[in-house]
Image (cartoon, rainbow, N blue to C red; front, top):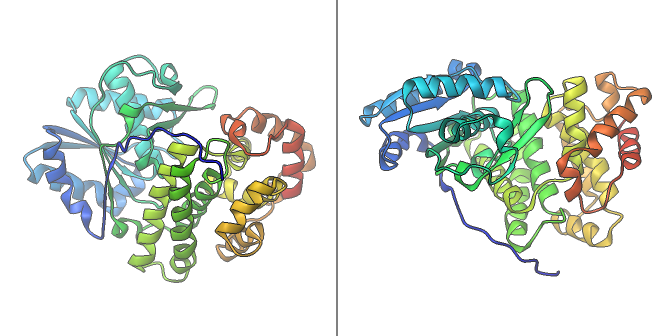
Length: 372
């Protein structure tokens, strides 16, 4: 395999282990914080985790407040509300506690709080000119890998277009990977985020930007997630299996940071935008078809074969069946008449350009048709 060049600086300190959330206070103090804003969502509040984190931070002598109004697939409205609270509180540390939505909102808040302007001003890479606040990321789902990425994915509240806003300064200084926090996830969240993490491992392995470094993380992410997923479905309180999924998701996040994603994610966004399909389901239902599409390239087929000794597309379908997730997009009420608009939007997604096999709008029509 040709060894492609890469430029990688580890930006996030990873701390993994059961119960490691208990260290959040001491770590906040290490970062020099005096006022910490915990960014979370209502479901996580019900689980009690923000209150626990607040108590730990306050016990370290640091003032703390919770903003818990984050919605799934956060928009500029979520970010603006968070900024207002952070500014009023005088936050000098942000703690993203929850799924990818909470962590993305915390990152989005960080851009505007420290650099001003609007979220759209940071659409792209490296557009923040001023220093940003330190961020501690504490994922409660094993899915997005946002804790190991420098991008915030924020939807424009008016156009619903997802903006990927990336900057090295936005990456979390510290990520606390505590599998205990993922046990309280509802089954549906577990399967949707788990499939998302698997898709990250598989897509980042073959993009046009994949390299020797990203390959290490992609491969280990797949090994961990593939090994842990079925165990978690059978034994939801198995902390070791939860740990496999959580660490695998984080490694997949590092792989994405160094490789990017492909056509499965391009297909997923229109399904979410037009038919409100949850992201993990949207990626999962399309992933087997993208694997088959990409396997027409011998070099990509060889990578897939090195990951799984058998038909990888069929294996992903088996995992979807095991998780009782839909395997046809007709399940969502999609018909043949909807395929052109889905394909048109998919072709405009930024991840499409990184797919290893070039994919046109007409290709997307056929991919959606195969999934129908």
